[in-house]
Structure formats: C-alpha cells, structure tokens
Length: 125
Image (cartoon, rainbow, N blue to C red; front, side, top):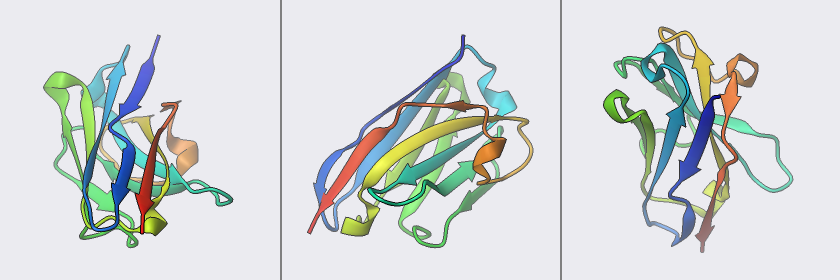
C-alpha cells in the first residue's frame, strides 16, 4: 500500500523560511516524478514544483521561482521543498504527490497517482 506523508509545515513570519518534507512508502521512489502542490483558502490547487526520479531536472512555478527549491533523497524515499522569503500569499495547504514515470516534468495534477494529506503553511504579515 502506497503512503505519502508530508511534514514540516507551520506558522512563520513574512520573510522567514521553512522546509517541507514528504516521505513515500510502498513504491520504488526513484521510479516516480515527485511534485509539490498547494491550495490556498478559496482558491484552486496549483502546482508549485516537480522533480524527476533521478533528481537531475526540476520545474518551478513562476510565483515561487528563486524562493523555493525542490530536492529529493532517493536513499531516504524523501522529497523536500525549501522555502525562503515567504510571503503571506504563500499561505496554503501544501501537498506532495507521486507520478509514475521518472523521466518527465509536469505540474498537471491529473498525472499524479498518489497524494498526501497535506501540511499547512501559514505566513503572517
């Protein structure tokens, strides 16, 4: 049974940093493209960043580019999202997801097969 579990969310002041983690089990981690998504109150869920199975290629949404960095440690079955210079607009539930196939980059949500329950990030002004 595949499980995807996010952690690391919390309350932070604007300009601060957080690192989210996501651990996946029940799958061959390196065979999956991994992605981070977020959903703010009253808004649709949007793609934030994704990374290929080997970790050599990434794609990041323009709204967070230069502030957020995605990475992965396949030996630990763990995905990360390092967030710097956080803004109140970054407040959202952040989700981790896994897509079968390790060699492509996509933020198309329908491509992702497994999702976590999310971790809340709140940025105060």
